[in-house]
Image 1 (cartoon, rainbow, N blue to C red):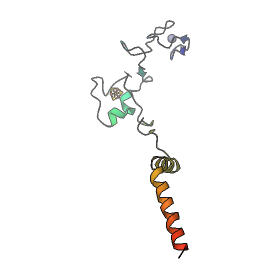
Image 2 (cartoon, rainbow, N blue to C red):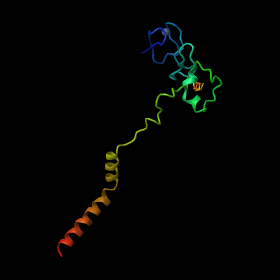
Image 3 (cartoon, rainbow, N blue to C red):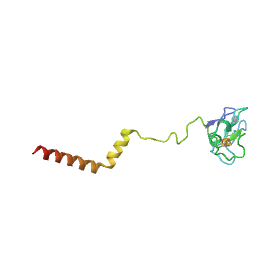
Length: 119
Ligand code: SF4
Ligand SMILES: [Zn+2]
């Protein structure tokens, strides 16, 4: 269950319209896709990433009051949130991948150290 944005009654999460007040909750024909709505007197395009980077080809641009593709340009994108491993975990992963060669190098270093000590 989710809450209707207009009347705040509980409605099914896959409902396309609120059964209490009739407001559209999802994009027409695309159940499950969020339909963003501008607050009164506002236009979504003014704060949309796709208007700012000029990549939107929707006919309702630049006056969209409702849009399924809206993305607030002040919010981080999926690319901004991309996972970046820490230096420690990168080194651990590298060591795990090259364990044989690291082991061989250590063995070689120990052998050379022993050989030099024996002189
Ligand atoms: S994606 Fe929608 S909100 Fe964004 S610029 Fe295009 S029409 Fe406007
Ligand atoms: Zn409602």
